[in-house]
Length: 112
Length: 113
Image (tube, rainbow over all chains, first blue to last red; front, side, top):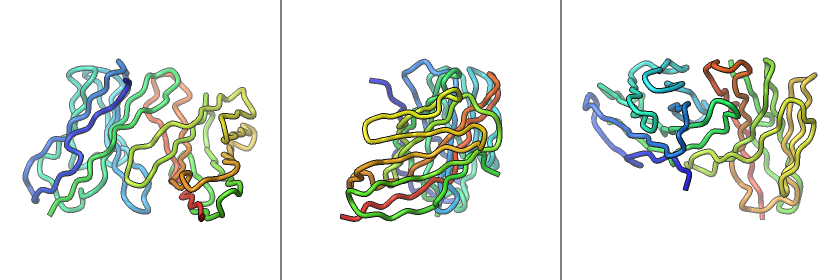
């Protein structure tokens, strides 16, 4: 089954404690991206990757890091989380022809 | 600013009625896509319309595209309670290798029983 998986689904952490949210897809997609969704602000792109070892900033990259060492994985790293990073995070992937996005189930992060 | 912008931001109708939501975009496109999001869940792809198409149907969904006005509409006929969700339009990059799929802010649709 074609899918994008994210882990964890829910996370409560404290300010400054490094965390990683994993994202994996099984569709051999070249394009992967991370979004955060906040009430009234819609979907905002954090980082995206056009292929292995190719990443670039989206609209709101501050405070986040990513890596793309393998085609299937695109982890999101928060080196020093802060309360303003409390949000719902989505990973998505697609090919680069049609660009139909497949979304993960989301990770709800709370930083206290 | 967002490439795709949905209108209205929120829509509330009675079950059985039709729901229409609109999307405007700014630049040339290869295709335009509509997605649905149930509360707190990931977006799900609904339908894609290519730039050389004017109308497309999928079940109770009807999408139109007017490239001269840079706008699209999504019509859901005979709405059901299960259609309650947020709906987003998205436009992929026109040029291969360009970077971003741009989502609008979404239309929140509520179907009242």
